[in-house]
Length: 392
Image (tube, rainbow, N blue to C red):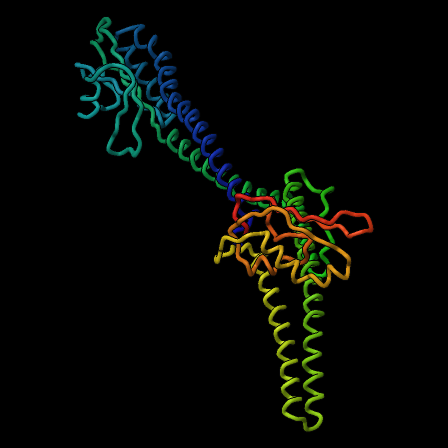
């Protein structure tokens, strides 16, 4: 199951979906986080712009009482907003600033973060300087806004993005596995069709027409392999039949002669003749077995090891001497012209020569021909051309 193509494709879909969701989520989070970070500052600037004109309009104590009432009203309406006014005159202060707030107010003007002991999140504070006016001394005006809401919104956004990414990855994995299973259906059908191809039903082939183009080359190669297997299987059946036929005759002779000899008592001379005949049949069996071993080693590509320099003309002449009576009965005359010395193994060469009309298997530059002798025909000639390549 670990090597399943569908699971591999599903895993790759999952990794791609995870990468895509991470990139999109990270980009979206950065943009939203940037926007959320600007919201407190924008709100501070908006509220200060509303109060600035009222603060600078008049500097009398009566007007300061109205400013104080307005700041109280704004603080009650929005608990996130804090106001502080720091001055050298205690009558023009607001918000009961402690030592930490007073030290913070002496810092640079502009928007800064202030962390109070009773607040888990920092306050975004806008520090501004108001010049003296009429009876009012110079003031440091501070507007602070609690950022807890923005941080909580940021946290909820991050949680939502992570949850959506996990759900999206799981869906991509499941859909990827489903799509992979659908895409691999032709391959599953091929596997089922290939399982039905077994001896002796080797003549069947996989169909190319309903397959996608990506599998055509694979199916063509598989069909070629089936064709070679079918040919090899046919040769094997033919070889088994030939071997059975070749072995049956000497075995039948051995069994028959032995059964006849055992029917009644025989003389020693008769037993000697039976054993001699059996020995000839056994020699024939050994020759057949050696031929089978030779064919098996030749099919496996085994190379000859006992190579000697041999004259092909002499080997052909030896074969012609062995077939002298057959050639004489067929009224065929053969003459050998030319010679070539090659590195061969004589036993294999003599076993591979079926007739005087062919040379050993693998001899590429040697040819022998023979023609039946007629009344006015010239004698048949066998030509042996030299070869520089060792014969194996």
